[in-house]
Length: 373
Image (cartoon, rainbow, N blue to C red; front, top):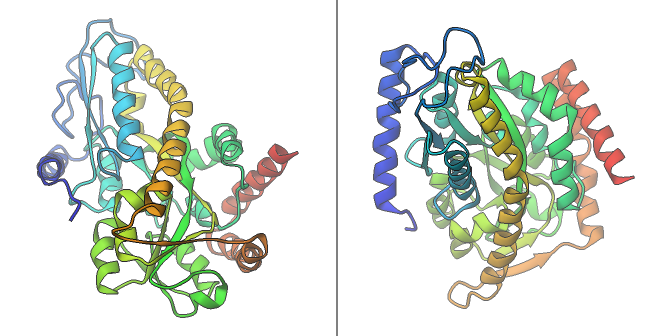
């Protein structure tokens, strides 16, 4: 009911066209100068050597897909990213930003991977069956309760920015930045205050085996589902609850069809600014530098966006008399009961994914502990 139909139709057309062109082009991902989604068009901007500068008058038209709608954090991030790059390049770099459309989040990952678009914001929860090590973001109570400190860890972590990034690059996706959209909270058609409240509870999750396991540890009955189906599924009782940052809960109107929201902060929602690896490696070095500079400039911008939206929209939920929602804040003791059940899931992650997952997770835990001291 909250879908923006005009933008959705445009996004549908663009992304369907992208898939057709990817199929026709055989999945080539070299630099796209003329802006035709997915086509292999050099037109002289790359002379065969990676990162070779070729002049200052080339014009680039690229596409940037997100998992959210205009007005939500990912879309606004991408729009600001495009604005900064256009200014840095004196108008040579033009990026069209696309909001969430009819394609599932999993399909959007495939579109980026195949070169149908150049940039995307991806949630690791939708890549869990591809880059299995990326499922570590599904582990509850892994990060600290200090959101600003968590962002610093995401910015500087070797475990993530070197070792996990290498895992994604083997699938032709390069994460340029890991950043948070805020703490995760629960909504439900009944109170979610204790693990007993989760017994048999039909919880919607992203398509990550580890997210499923995390909720099974509480006794829940988790169901994988694209968020585009979620509002109606909550309304009809197909699922009984879900997790998301506050801004997304309010903007997607999930609180309209849920009676309770629990401030659990059991996890943080991590998004990745990503680029098609082959495309990026084929760009001139000055263009690569502009992109990387923009990524750095966007770090504080993204943090401020999520902090402001989450604070403002929590107030909007609390003060909504038309669709009243009971907001429950877990006590430290109540959170500890969930933490005790969540910690053993780390062992499952290591056993299920393997040695590299263990190394990445252990290094990340060391980095988190060091940041707190």
